[in-house]
Length: 179
Image 1 (tube, rainbow, N blue to C red):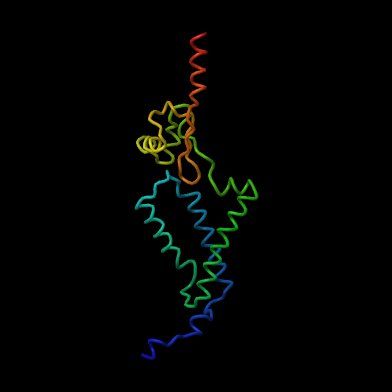
Image 2 (image 1 turned 90 degrees about the vertical axis):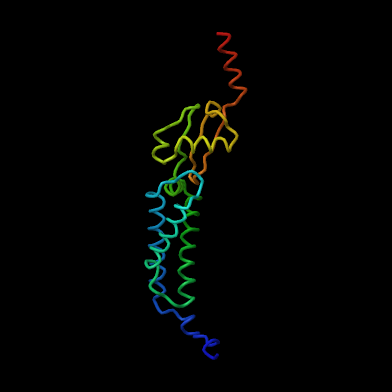
């Protein structure tokens, strides 16, 4: 029973590895994973599937050893987490305050539909099928692509839609009739 209640305070709180090494490992691994996910992994429309979750879990598991040696103290674990959180907040701060970092850290919107016509090259690059695009349009209340002035795949994976303004469309029809 004594072993059940025994707490090894020194092992729990005193780091067994260099704190600078833990911060360096956390920094290098966070930035590496960020760059891989930003530039290698392609954004997709806003649905998260089983394969996406599996990739995230596998990346986390594969990166775990690179983040830190087999540390045992809470201090080391907390420092590693704080290093990762710091880089996440810092990169967000940079992209908010400096346009160049915003462009680097978040991809620009990608045109999928322009004046009712699909941009199949952009769809192919992002692996978006016509059925998937039509499904996203239906969710936004669009039945026919002719209703879409512009649709973009945004940095967060969502598809934004700008519909054709019906007053402009009526005006164009009236002008065509009078000409």
